[in-house]
Image 1: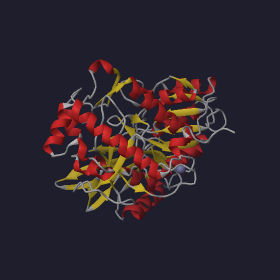
Image 2 (image 1 turned 30 degrees about the vertical axis):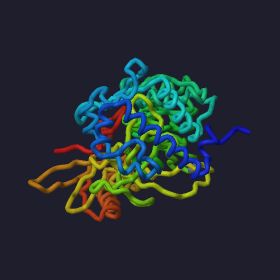
Image 3 (image 1 turned 135 degrees about the horizontal axis):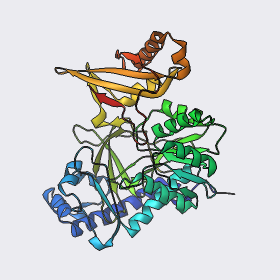
Image 4 (image 1 turned 90 degrees about the vertical axis):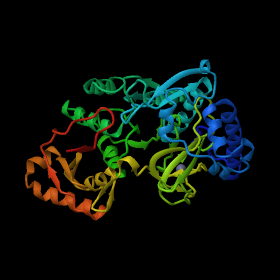
Length: 430
Ligand SMILES: [Zn+2]
């Protein structure tokens, strides 16, 4: 019988043993960064913490947070805790909001990355006979490389097409008989649109069975649409350059995000006070990399909002569970006193029959007041039927039922919103 787990011993480890392993690794980590890196030594000295003070897991709360600001200050290699010539690979984030974040890896780090990605992809259902079309952009960004390493560890075939040139994507998907598609969820929807334009049926004319999607926050409703449109199972991936890239969690067949907690220690904090929150409470995700060598992060503040759960999952994995990301705290908008995340608007829109997956949220400022409106593309079929004010009203009602806020919705001609081959830009300012 084929195992359901990539690494059964770790993935089904009793929680007590897992915590012991985490503590042992945390102690080693703090000692390592204290002796190997000036910045970390100063940070710990300033906080009055010595490596020997870490006696139990929650002693981690004595250590100050690591922030994006710190990473910028020590750009590019100031936080490296090994010799520079031990580094064999470097990645970086796009740096759209300042200096890019740099992710250096030793050979062991690269191996670890492949291992946690294999665990995640295997949990999604990928096996050795699969062919993964890797439509994340190859480059400094971690995405494509993480998926490649994991798939190759499983022994699957990696089709290294990168993003863009969408007609060619469709041809390759058909000719090479891709069974797994790896890209952003929004790009998968654009590919389906192009396939249809070419006279192909996404559900029938391809061998695709699984989508491994990430690098973008998307609603559960969008996931349902992607699954229906392609006739596949769509899995969520989550990770970040500061931690390792993709591979921080593994989504199981029950669509629960199990944290690869033998390598990544998670806390949820109140974003305003920094106080640690209880399981079930929503707050900011904070990660500590327990085993990474070149660039260990201790208590890195992600700005991503989620909660932890102590549920027992029917899949048999004992690794702790985190909720899907509600949004980045940077994406949070406050409108008439109501907190709004783009994913909540998306969730409303995707309930409405005849609304396509293409929409944009328009944010405008009148003095100090933020106002929102939404432009949607109806499906071609719905557009031709007319009476679009009905559709707009339904969309407004769905958004209202989620947010308790009136957000005007306007239907615009299909195929006018820009298509994305990577991360979709959902919010624009006017
Ligand atoms: Zn599970």
